[in-house]
Image 1 (tube, rainbow, N blue to C red):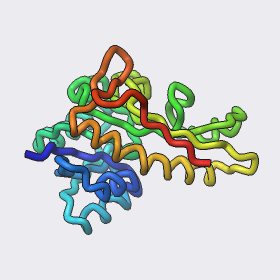
Image 2: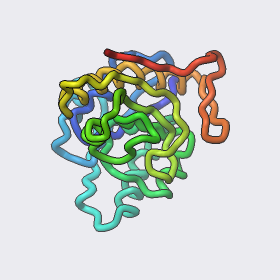
Image 3: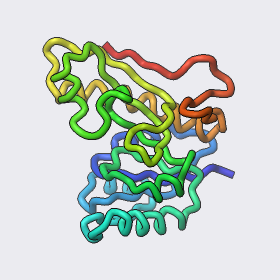
Image 4: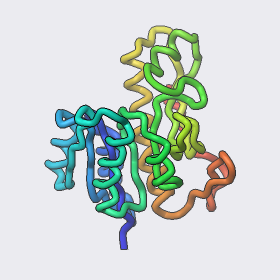
Length: 209
């Protein structure tokens, strides 16, 4: 029996597409849910035969109420994995704990550096020589969960926010499907704040110059 994945998006859904196109053995994306009805990724998902839902966060005055409604939609599918693929909402502790160790996020920085928003701008302003992305399990502490994989790109002297974001996104599209495949294959275990692989001695890392 295939393991079920629910994917949460807020925008284009390019990481959703990367995971879908990877055709991961033993995995099935059973639903795509967005907090925005105008998310471009919803149309793509529908065109590829995926079930979609919209839970508009603006209809809820409290974050906890939105999260509770979102959980109802997710739990209907009884997923093995909930994947945050460009989902631009801070989730409540109750939500994070409800999906503990089966909730994965991709963040566009090399955590613990630059949690939160505007990561590429902050990397450039800080004079970083490298930037990148992090795939991690989600905990109630924002962008602080156990790290599954990190991908690195060189920061060029002529980089803009847009050019740096483009190259980091390319690495995200490589790393996320592999991390999901490892989760689906039960290759990941959490040891304190570290993620270990059962059949690999090294982490997944990419350097894109």
